[in-house]
Length: 205
Image (cartoon, rainbow, N blue to C red; front, side, top):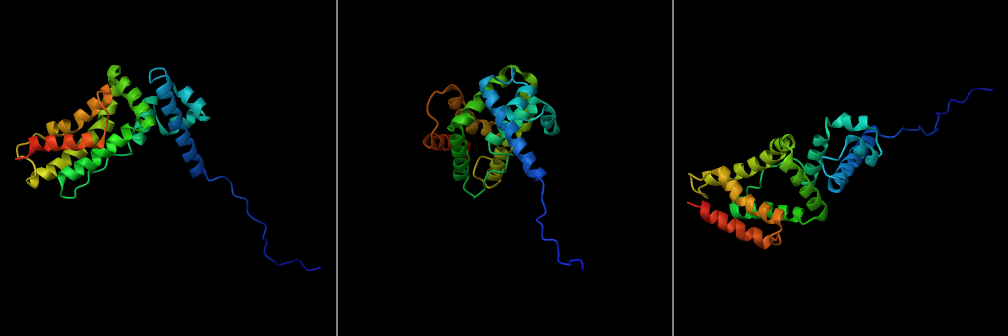
């Protein structure tokens, strides 16, 4: 009897996609760190605790992050919307600033972001190394984005040529964070609009 020459149509079994599996593990780790940050705080949080909460081995965490501080920085970066990007530049400085600051208000008004941000801010107050990492990896890139947009506005004559751009950034962002941190009043889009109008009134030529 001659052997069949028909092609073998038996479905080929494929193993799980390691990229998808790794992304699930990474997301689980960040979710676990975010939950623990709010529940026990940074000081009491451990890599072992993150691993147990995420259902992964501790070495899986160390594959991506060298320390729990690095994990938490990524948590906050995720909550803040990812890496810092340039501010919009439509030619209308006031409109661009309102767009960005309104989005910031919306983030802070999200319960999960508020909870993580407050735990994060509390840790910055008494851990100098952590505070330094936060400043270099998170705050400075965001402040540079504001500064570059203001520099463009200064070159276009929208603000005074001798305006101190570092102070101008603090003038725009500081009051918002003060109101959020101390809960002195609600964070609203109307507040952002008033803040931008007052700041630009002070900065215009």
